[in-house]
Amino acid sequence: MKITRNITLLLALMLTTFTQAQTSIGEKAKKDLIQQTSFGGYVIGKATATDQHLNASTKSHTDFDIRLVRAYVDGKVLDFKYKLQLELNGKPGDYSNEKGVRIVDAWAEWQKYKFFYVRFGQFKRAFTFENPMNPWDIGFGAYSQLITKLAGMNDRVGEHSSNGRDLGLQFQGDFLPMGNDRHNFIHYQVGVYNGQGINHKDENRSKDVIGGIYVYPVKQLAVGVFGWTGDYTKNGITVDRNRMAFGVKYESAWTVRAEYATSEGHKITDYSSDGILKAGTSNKADAWYMTVGAPLSRKCKVYAKWDVYRDSKNWSSQKSLYCLAANYYFYKNLKIQANYTYTNDKSTANDGHYNTFDLQLYWRF
Image (cartoon, rainbow, N blue to C red; front, side, top):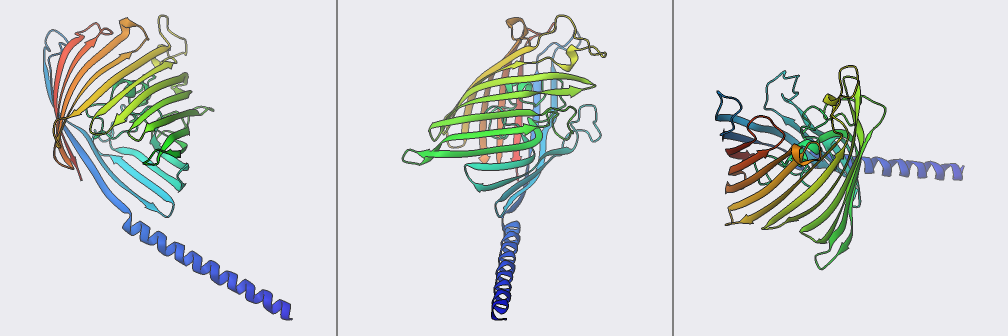
């Protein structure tokens, strides 16, 4: 009877301890949810003028546009970080371009150990340095062609506009601290994705695998290599997406960023409706860019960029952009940006040599 009584007391003590631990965890989770959840967003307005001759009657063009309106909620509860972000600009019900109101980010990440984070949901693909960057931080009025065409913004294969994102599972982490500042020498990230872009279920039996590894000789300097293998399906046609990228990134008062990517795989439009490959199409493409940013003052930074995309990986399909930009911060969350771009597009039969000026106002809340 004494043994039975002791076992009963031990079980009661264990149950009490477990209940107290649950209560403590629940209270901490509630506290985190209240104190570490934030709501925000940003708006980017744009005015553009170009002298491109689209046809005999259109010799110049001006436009006012809302480039982006985003709203988000993010935070951290216990060891889990999360984010939900909506894009609010565009035409509601624009199902042809899928650029109306929509979810762009919806993910949660377990962050117990810095060398092994696990993220699940819809988020940026782990490809290139520039793709994961926020539009506020790239320095120009648009991402580089390498990102838009080869990282899933408006992908060359014919995928709907996906803002460089997809649905999947990703592992990432940092390790091997070094130097006096103990910065991590290695960062890695690898993910498994549907391959169909945002807000779309998988359309084939395979998954895309995308990953990258960076080394940091010093805290501000990263050298990276990236890989992507997978395929994309639309209208019953499946095309390959096999890509590699290499890059270097230095971010401090000065900015230096350069990347090169090569792609192998046809576009959906390279095939007829009955799935026959059209003659004269190419399954290769590449792109590169080089960016330099210099501070003129605490509030003003200027950038220059050479930006090239070759749709068939030859010189006759080359589109080159020569860009200048100036960013002036009125306050931390309010800036104005002036951009100039000279375009030399050898791939078009229309006017391939033209100038574009735009003024963009960034407001964050």
